[in-house]
Length: 231
Image (cartoon, rainbow, N blue to C red; front, side, top):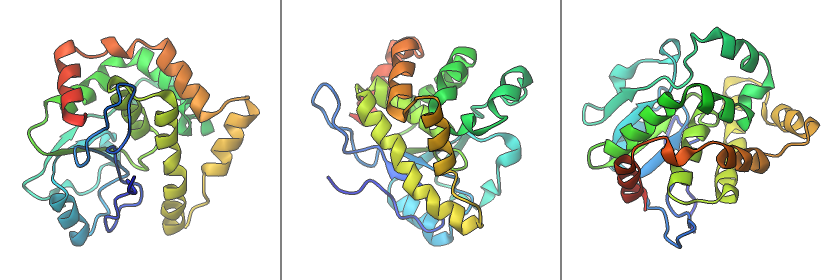
């Protein structure tokens, strides 16, 4: 299987969700759905590569104050902004944003239980996007993007092992992003946080999918459209 990483100039953590085998024995389609870190730093060459790859819809999961210059995005690519966090709910975020826990999948289940409509909006936007590739992204392409990737892949029949393996690919890619920013790599801190609690990424994701009824998150019609796009 070829490398799913997309070497777009100015992007560090972009990869295609194609080439994965799901429980039905089907394989996910290439150039259909892509996950990524922030696209704001893409160079003109990077944007040209995005267009050549067939991307026609961008779903931006960031909060309003995180967004950069959207005007540099090619006119042939539509951008849909759906802030996933619901950051104004301070009762929720005062706990989850106060330490390394926000950088792990531990917050996925609490977030899905409290704000199911936000993830549903993103999934419906992916399912109903016009013809062409769809990319969804946050800042680093690991946490919010990881939550949506988990749901997309789970709805298409991917196992917890497959989803966790995809999630874990971000650790290597983000080392380069942190280095570029002159910041320390967060990966070891997050790994230690999970290990101290006897957790692994795989177990957290498996428990989340077993606990949350993701099959009912969107309508059957949207779920069918999502599977038709990716499988």
